[in-house]
Image 1 (cartoon, rainbow, N blue to C red):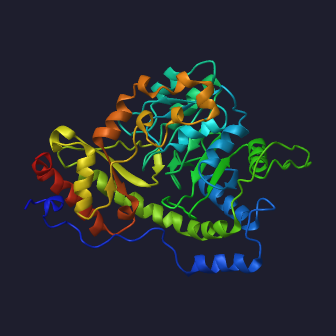
Image 2 (image 1 turned 45 degrees about the horizontal axis):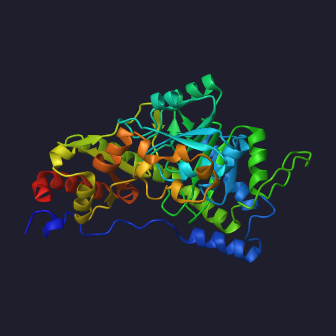
Image 3 (image 1 turned 90 degrees about the vertical axis):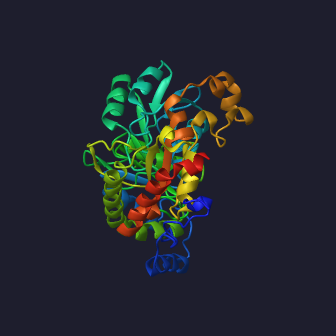
Length: 409
């Protein structure tokens, strides 16, 4: 019998971490009120609870407008469409993100240009952005990943210089701040997901933030079947029903009341992990940029050195999980992502531009290294728990490193 739990040893932790989502009778009461009201859906748009949540969430991030939508993929697509991005345009996206980030430009008619990430934080590399710009480039979609943010100073400087639209993918960044400006309020659009695992959730749902009145009107119109949203009621567009229901908005309105306190707890535990993990040989803590003035922690990502552990991240994640700590190896690099296979689809953009989706020609060394060798993602339930649970997570990682020879064997 080995020392590691995966080989029959005693696990570091046997108790379960708290469940997610967190809720209480306030959610029950809010949803009950909506049920009794008879107004369950999102029409007329926005519903009163959706409007109230959008206003409060936008204020929390320092944005002028919030527009609630059906999910966090629609928010990306609608943002691009509102910006006028369409057939044949190019949108630069990072290689290390969920498949929706690259799918959204295709749904808007554009081509996702996949670029590499910065090794220090696993977010989009500004140098790679600039190298990928062509006369057809229209937008950049930086992703704030895990508990860190893309270099928004560099992104916005590039966007201004080349007259590009910036759509921040903030699916992991509810409550984050860059130089005291909220995530999603820095670029032209900020897209947030409210899917089940996210820091603020109604099961499904999303919201777009923007400081531009015209973009806000267009977003409202695009998600409400194209109905006019300008003050004169004359500017009809071509849209569909992507509205958020009042039942979901009721849940979000209550959950938002907890977000600031939960963010502070996660941030404190992440800072503690930065210190503790930096002392373990073979573990690299991703660099927190000092310009991140509030850290949202969807998941805490760190890197392992496969040479020290003797195996790659997939095996290390399995061993840590067996010790009772919820981790996984994270996303695949986009050119190898099983959820992003445009060439296997009948999607019109993939058929129109087949050469742009030949994944075998893509060279993305940093994203590949992170996905296939280094990255470990620690679930936010650990970050939201007490310090004992965080200490046990550290001890489990230390234990796996100490007995890594068992994994190699």
